[in-house]
Length: 357
Image 1 (cartoon, rainbow, N blue to C red):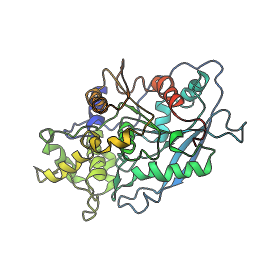
Image 2: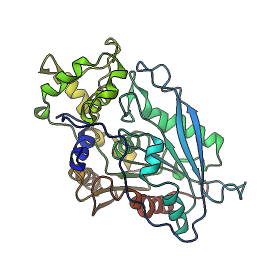
Image 3: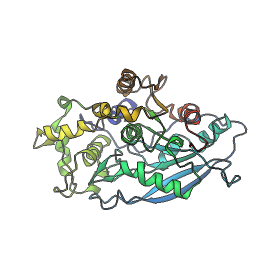
Image 4: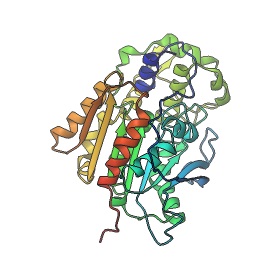
């Protein structure tokens, strides 16, 4: 798969279709080791999600989560910390996400360069079709509430956090950037600052782009497990449908596709469009005003640049201050540098490191 193709796939999570191989991991460059950086501790835990239990697709309610504890966590038993929840992109899970952003090196480097020490939490939201879209669906489960409620509640009760919204940050890359926008718009009572890295799926797709021939290929899928052999693009169609057009009366996949018998289905297309943040952002301006800071970044060679610019323009139109940067790079090649040198310092500056009255 060419990098350009991958960008366009992730941008829409697909309405057009392409015959490309599945892609599980992108090799990214790592920033150099920072002299004097102290080691962090990585814990691998499982968090039970009542909001995911009972989904029709069979997704596990016990979710894998990586927790990165700062160097001082073990030495200072009375100290409490802000928390940043960092969401991965489509086709990977938390472990691959950590490799993409070169944890622990980037976290240790950020702290060594002066960022305040905080806890990082990387939940795994990969599904049978390779991505939850951080959405709420009877088919996949309610991953939106898992992140915003179940996970936050667990972390606050098991780690020494500063358990208030002003001390929680939400961030993500690509599909995780979409999740940050979606969850951030709806759950401003839980988070105090947002950072979206190359967010995908911000705008409704043009129905004219839908190719019925692509969806014809999905007719052979008779069970969720069958999707494992599909191309990246085709699997993305199933992930999107499971998240945004679930159908509890339609086993075994429990979803509706935007094409049926070669005919575009306007009601399904409308459901997909309704999940695009640029379609519903105007309903949540009051929530956005609650954030201390919002940041969006995207590479100048990234196919998602236009939508990111549009979202920034919406915020600007409403007088909501936000940081927006187009940097030299594509969808993934600078993500580790950005995580170390931009994202973590952003939260260091904008989260509360002391409990607020």
